[in-house]
Image 1 (tube, one colour):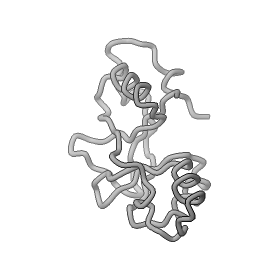
Image 2 (cartoon, helix red, strand yellow):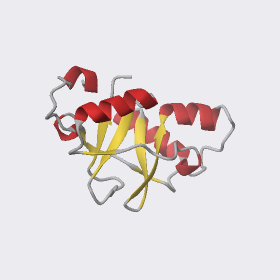
Image 3 (cartoon, helix red, strand yellow):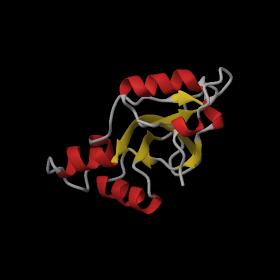
Image 4 (cartoon, one colour):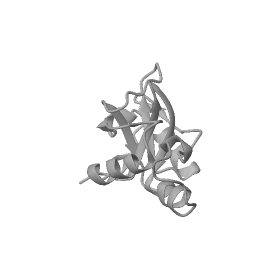
Length: 135
């Protein structure tokens, strides 16, 4: 069972994102299809995937993006996932202050944000991290 940011957050000033983030999250390549994104989400039981072009984070795709921007709009399921991805993407570092990130997520009504290293790298199909909020 996943735990939300609110469930874990105790408000301490020393809390960092690394303490509560989901590790080893999977990302999808910008050139992968919308259908592949939907299948990955179903297999992994997740509602969001970071979208990467090589090691660069270029967007995020959610189950809502697929439903509203693809299915409801008649976009071909073999179109590249980047065509419906949310851009620009919001992200944070693992050593960012948890209270600050939580406020930003709540203010922007964001449920999940990718956690990047300080080189802002994203590695498709390999260990990434996600911070899951409570909105």
